[in-house]
Image (cartoon, rainbow over all chains, first blue to last red; front, side, top):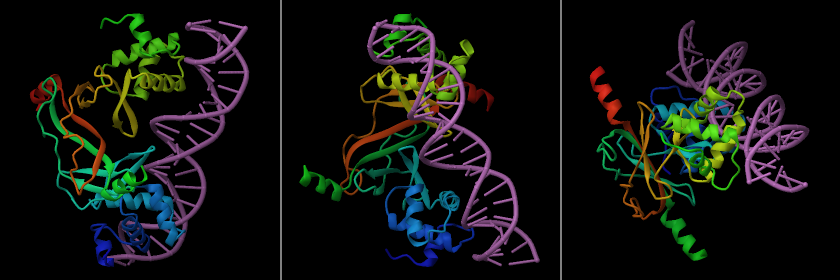
Length: 143
Length: 143
DNA sequence: GTGTATGCAAACTGTTTGCATGGAC
DNA sequence: GTCCATGCAAACAGTTTGCATACAC
């Protein structure tokens, strides 16, 4: 992962960047796929146990606000976040249930058409779940 | 709404049916569309304030278990439930953001194809949001 | 120097659970 | 008569917030 401090700093947009926030961004990149805030807190604590949970929550909110992170779903009652390259373009996510990896995928839902009784559709939420090529291969080997 | 006690009782499958559970089912039908547990509790309290929150949660779980109710999404951090006629068939939901009405809609997502990098898709979640014909008409009148 | 991010802990919300009791079957 | 559903309250998990302080700008 080639990621400079400058890259990390850009994640927060115009907000201030502290050492903690830089660590949080690094941990996000290390996790790679989708993660809960709790998992992110653990990852951050691996390099600095002094970072508070509230700080991580606030940083995640800031990152979500700047568009660098996205809320991609829910797992066991906690919000799932993931870094997504697709940015502001309309897209959805494929979540690997093996390793948590998240990829952007284009929207295959027929946009604003009315599927039932003349509903006027304004937005939709789509999340695909499955296995990435690696996990898919591992799965078929193990049975 | 033509719904006999017998209909209400069937909602719980083979589980026991108490007067509270019958009231909960009635309240569900009165609400009509999607609702949170909190809204359901309020509706139930309109006819019997003595019903406990835990009872409603337990009844909702039982109704979900029997397939009579479905979890159709999340609103403000609380789970959204709705009665759905579609039953066990694969389908999705259209939620009216005006009145909360929920309709089943057939799946327009191209099933198990791999949208990105050879992912093997096993399942997906789709929820459509918009305005039903009535709310859509009201909206355009009011601007 | 100003204002924002931090850390701590408490508060808050939605949901679940333990327990004694009443009611459905 | 047995066993499950109930009601109450406490417990619980995830998340947010208040406040004094440290630090980025």
